[in-house]
Length: 117
Image 1 (cartoon, rainbow, N blue to C red):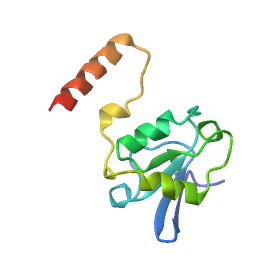
Image 2 (image 1 turned 60 degrees about the horizontal axis):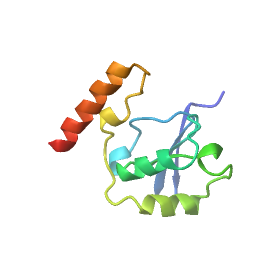
Image 3 (image 1 turned 90 degrees about the vertical axis):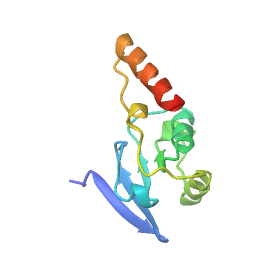
Protein backbone atom coordinates (compact mmCIF):
# COMPACT_ATOMS: atom_id res chain seq x y z
CA UNK A 1 0.00 0.00 0.00
CA UNK A 2 1.34 3.43 -0.98
CA UNK A 3 1.49 6.20 1.62
CA UNK A 4 -1.16 8.90 1.09
CA UNK A 5 1.46 11.67 1.04
CA UNK A 6 4.91 11.64 -0.54
CA UNK A 7 7.51 14.36 0.02
CA UNK A 8 10.29 14.78 -2.53
CA UNK A 9 13.16 17.18 -2.89
CA UNK A 10 14.22 17.78 -6.50
CA UNK A 11 17.00 20.26 -7.27
CA UNK A 12 16.44 21.82 -3.84
CA UNK A 13 12.67 22.22 -4.32
CA UNK A 14 10.46 20.47 -1.76
CA UNK A 15 7.39 18.96 -3.41
CA UNK A 16 4.50 17.46 -1.45
CA UNK A 17 2.48 14.95 -3.48
CA UNK A 18 -0.98 13.74 -2.54
CA UNK A 19 -3.95 12.36 -4.40
CA UNK A 20 -6.13 14.86 -2.53
CA UNK A 21 -5.71 18.66 -2.32
CA UNK A 22 -4.65 19.95 1.08
CA UNK A 23 -5.31 23.30 2.72
CA UNK A 24 -1.97 23.10 4.52
CA UNK A 25 1.08 21.03 3.67
CA UNK A 26 4.60 20.41 4.91
CA UNK A 27 6.87 23.39 4.22
CA UNK A 28 4.05 25.53 2.86
CA UNK A 29 5.34 28.66 4.56
CA UNK A 30 8.85 27.92 3.24
CA UNK A 31 8.06 27.68 -0.47
CA UNK A 32 7.22 24.00 -0.90
CA UNK A 33 4.89 23.04 -3.73
CA UNK A 34 1.80 20.87 -3.31
CA UNK A 35 0.83 18.77 -6.33
CA UNK A 36 -2.41 16.80 -6.29
CA UNK A 37 -5.25 15.40 -8.35
CA UNK A 38 -8.71 14.10 -7.38
CA UNK A 39 -10.87 17.18 -7.99
CA UNK A 40 -11.22 16.93 -11.80
CA UNK A 41 -11.02 20.71 -12.28
CA UNK A 42 -11.56 21.17 -15.99
CA UNK A 43 -9.61 23.96 -17.60
CA UNK A 44 -7.14 26.03 -15.63
CA UNK A 45 -9.41 28.10 -13.35
CA UNK A 46 -8.59 26.23 -10.13
CA UNK A 47 -4.84 26.45 -10.69
CA UNK A 48 -5.09 30.10 -11.70
CA UNK A 49 -7.05 31.00 -8.55
CA UNK A 50 -4.43 29.21 -6.46
CA UNK A 51 -1.75 31.29 -8.16
CA UNK A 52 -3.69 34.54 -7.64
CA UNK A 53 -3.92 33.74 -3.92
CA UNK A 54 -0.18 33.12 -3.80
CA UNK A 55 -0.64 29.38 -3.21
CA UNK A 56 2.03 27.03 -4.47
CA UNK A 57 -0.61 24.34 -5.04
CA UNK A 58 -1.36 22.80 -8.43
CA UNK A 59 -3.88 20.25 -9.72
CA UNK A 60 -1.77 17.97 -11.93
CA UNK A 61 -4.81 15.90 -12.94
CA UNK A 62 -5.27 15.33 -16.65
CA UNK A 63 -8.62 17.18 -16.86
CA UNK A 64 -7.00 20.37 -15.54
CA UNK A 65 -4.14 20.18 -18.05
CA UNK A 66 -5.56 19.38 -21.46
CA UNK A 67 -5.28 15.63 -20.81
CA UNK A 68 -1.49 15.90 -20.86
CA UNK A 69 1.15 15.36 -18.20
CA UNK A 70 2.75 18.44 -16.63
CA UNK A 71 6.55 18.57 -16.69
CA UNK A 72 8.77 19.78 -13.87
CA UNK A 73 9.89 22.66 -16.11
CA UNK A 74 6.26 23.67 -16.71
CA UNK A 75 5.65 23.63 -12.96
CA UNK A 76 8.74 25.76 -12.30
CA UNK A 77 7.54 28.29 -14.86
CA UNK A 78 4.01 28.25 -13.41
CA UNK A 79 5.15 28.79 -9.83
CA UNK A 80 7.57 31.52 -10.94
CA UNK A 81 4.39 33.48 -11.78
CA UNK A 82 3.40 33.59 -8.11
CA UNK A 83 4.33 37.12 -7.05
CA UNK A 84 4.31 36.63 -3.30
CA UNK A 85 3.82 33.08 -2.00
CA UNK A 86 1.25 32.82 0.75
CA UNK A 87 2.28 30.85 3.83
CA UNK A 88 -1.28 29.86 4.64
CA UNK A 89 -4.63 29.35 2.98
CA UNK A 90 -7.28 31.85 3.95
CA UNK A 91 -10.01 29.51 5.16
CA UNK A 92 -13.05 31.22 3.60
CA UNK A 93 -11.54 30.46 0.20
CA UNK A 94 -11.20 26.73 0.79
CA UNK A 95 -14.41 25.95 2.64
CA UNK A 96 -16.31 23.46 0.52
CA UNK A 97 -19.57 24.68 -0.89
CA UNK A 98 -22.42 22.54 0.35
CA UNK A 99 -25.10 23.59 -2.09
CA UNK A 100 -26.96 25.24 0.81
CA UNK A 101 -27.86 28.68 -0.56
CA UNK A 102 -27.99 30.29 2.89
CA UNK A 103 -24.49 29.04 3.73
CA UNK A 104 -23.25 30.31 0.34
CA UNK A 105 -24.79 33.77 0.95
CA UNK A 106 -23.27 33.99 4.43
CA UNK A 107 -19.85 32.88 3.17
CA UNK A 108 -19.98 35.40 0.29
CA UNK A 109 -20.89 38.19 2.73
CA UNK A 110 -18.03 37.18 5.03
CA UNK A 111 -15.57 37.24 2.12
CA UNK A 112 -16.75 40.73 1.11
CA UNK A 113 -16.23 41.98 4.68
CA UNK A 114 -12.74 40.45 4.85
CA UNK A 115 -11.69 42.00 1.52
CA UNK A 116 -12.89 45.43 2.67
CA UNK A 117 -10.76 45.25 5.88
